[in-house]
Image (cartoon, rainbow, N blue to C red; front, side, top):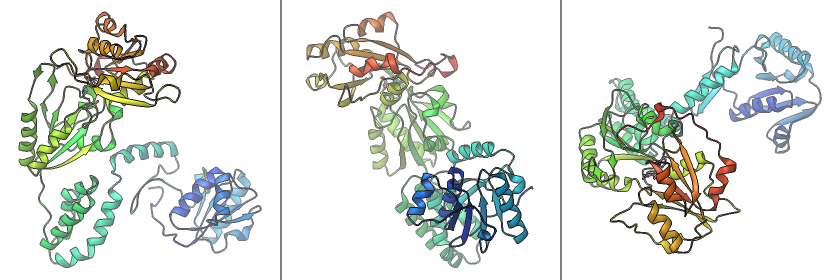
Length: 471
Ligand code: SAH
């Protein structure tokens, strides 16, 4: 070990930062966050430090560093771009036994500063011993995604109950109790944002001197439109702790790859006119699996509450008293539009945007065409590929010009994305000529013309990113 990692209490303690630039400002920021009383010595200040000085958050001495500036300081940081000054600060502090840090110069340091993951009161510090601050930062970014933001609240809740638990469980193994709390339903509830429920469950557990039993639960999770990088942190975390996953046709293969390997996989996909599992059976399946005590991941393409029947699924869970959480995902409209370079709204073209279903039933689509056919709005059709002729015909019949720009985004956000651009007159033919396949989103409106200017996503079209063969 090259350094001893410690966490220092600097609340209301005098700290000194020598230097007034942006690097100094970053250090001052941390010292202030930890409650330090910060003095800054520098001939001039950057904008941020100046604001803090004006607000009275720091005490500022506008002049070069003097040896007695370090008197009475608990820690000192040198962040000037003058090596001689930095090294003078370092040697003066070392003689006096004051912990000193010199930015970007480990040799002159009495202590070094780690990369920090802050979930106060939980803090994780990462250091490479000064070897590579960039590596420390990369590690930090990785860990940030794995550690739920709620861990701070979890630690605070535990802290609150610590004394009571010690009293109630006197003579028992307190460590086991807390292990079960921190890996069980109480922690899950808190992470899911159900703080009141979590507190009540913990209170009850302390009262009974017994942690609550593991329970089955359903995670209704939006998997986004295809690109696995578009998953939320929470989606990824729940995907990695599921016992069983019930997934749709629209969930892309690279996303499925991120689900815990030893989970049981159940395909509940729907193809047009060929319902693999009817909706009622899916609802019943989720209830049964959860009641068996399993953590059930219900993984849906895009967002579960946008043309995803997520509402119906959780209604059944509610009725059956099964716990659940809902995790939003990036809906196809947002994902496809971004990756196709088509902003859904734009000050110069449109004032509103509609998401509608273009699902064809008995040769018609049940929509209020009059409300849709407005030049000043973008319309996004989900499930509209088979009804594309009808969609274009109705929009023209209800007043939109046949020249209105329109696009088909096929397998949006995946390595196989294709964008076909035309207008209400040409779109149906494009579908046949280019053999466009689902999943495809239709975007109608003047914003489509921006695609030529703003398209940025240029995938290689590798097979690995294809949607599952089931479709
Ligand atoms: N809940 C999903 C939508 C389900 S409806 C969401 O929020 O995105 C299914 C329709 O979504 C498909 O028929 C298609 O129109 C659209 N869709 C989903 N993913 C898509 C993708 N990657 N590319 C293009 N369209 C997509």
